[in-house]
Amino acid sequence: MLFKYKDFISTINLSKEEIFEILDTAKHMKEINKREVKKVPTLKGKTISTAFFEPSTRTRTSFEIAAKRLSADTVSFTSTTSSTTKGETLLDTIKNIENMHTDIFVIRHKCSGAVKFVADNVKAHIVNAGDGTNEHPTQAMLDLFTIREHKNTLTGLNVAIIGDIDHSRVARSNIWAMQKLGINVILYGPKTMLPSDTTPLKCHIAKNFKEAVTEADVVMMLRIQLERQNKILIPSLREYAMYFGLNKTSAKYLKKDAIIMHPGPINRGVELSTEYADCDRSVILNQVENGIAVRMAILYLLGMQKRRTDGSST
Amino acid sequence: MFEIEICDENELKNRINSIVEFIKDIINKEINNNSFALIGIKRRGAILADRIKELLSKFNNIFIEIGYLDITLYRDDLSEISDLPQLLGTEIEFDVKNKKIFLIDDVIFTGRTARAAIDAILDLGRPKQILLTTIIDRNNRELPIQPDFTGKFIETAFNDIVNVYLKEIDGKDEITLTRCK
Image 1 (cartoon, chains in turn blue, green):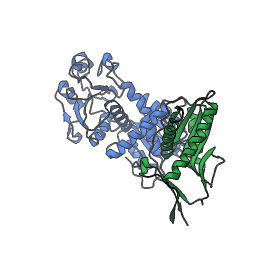
Image 2: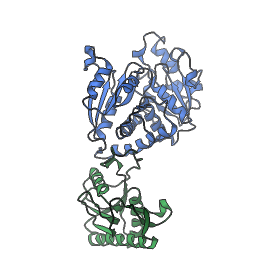
Image 3: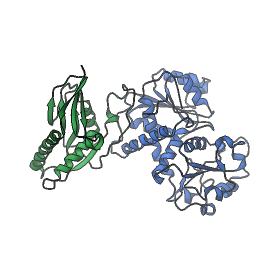
């Protein structure tokens, strides 16, 4: 096994081989999810705690189901029900739960870097379930897994990521991972929703929707993150939908065999119109299904390794 | 440390044939009342299962379901080993319910692999019976699990290593014993 990190925080340090190892492990996990008894005893006796300091349905449920299918015990707490509302610091909260002999934490936090900070300061394994606008590495892995399932390959594909790039942790994790695999990533979005400096992303920025999707094998629509916008970035949702959304008018530029992805939750009628969210080419629900297998793979790879002392993480 | 030959190509073939005979006899006796399946434990048990299926098909066209089991996720020593093994994946497409299953592996040693395999199969459903067959039975069992049929018994010390080489992955058919003094 190549994967030897204590934590799973980011895709930026992963090698091509390590990414393939995660995807291959997930492939075998997926078989378990199709059985009548969807459970293996692998993580029996391990405790996995999901600590979400930001709302989530998909990711938290997905991690909990993944943990239970591997027979781990799961505990979950959210910011509203935890002592953080009484003023306890993030690290204190996690350290307290860690001392109840938790082996793995799955953490989501609104601040970029918060999960890495926790990982550097505790002995337990930490999985990043989304930190602010920084990264959402398990989403990137399940996206790659889904793309590979539909396209049978990854290297050499063209992927268009469209929408609120600046606020998107999904985009960032995907960009880092895809570039390792030789996937060509094109970005498109309103100027106000692109990073002020796009050079570190090393991606081509399309000038219009047509240019973004014409060559794309995969079209990944991002969610407009209304909760993360403290200033007005677009004139109106209607205008956004017209110029940056996937709808009847813009869909005619798509390649016939292009697949449509979305990390969810969808703002129907904004970035994605209903007819394309639910069409044959949409793999959005496959993404959700594959999320379980990918998260099982990551929990397995982390939970089964002997605890390392050098604390390296990715 | 030295390596001695236990089975050459010819002998290995005979041992596999004896397993085929064992399975064939049971199938012939019970063909009207039961359905049967072979499950090979990856990797070498799976290869042996393929060969056994092939040999069985020569007798009155006996058809038998075949599946392959990866027991990694059921191992009881996963957290002890430093290098986590690569998952190979379980491929059992048929329903194990009410089937008589011939579980096939190359060697039975501590019995822990067989235990893991039995647990893995039971998670897929309730078979009527599981029969364990291996080419080599060596002593040093750590669990009260005994095979129903084996090709050959050899006396070993716990530290000895039985090496099963199969053409499909090792380029030759041979079984050797490495004695560690």
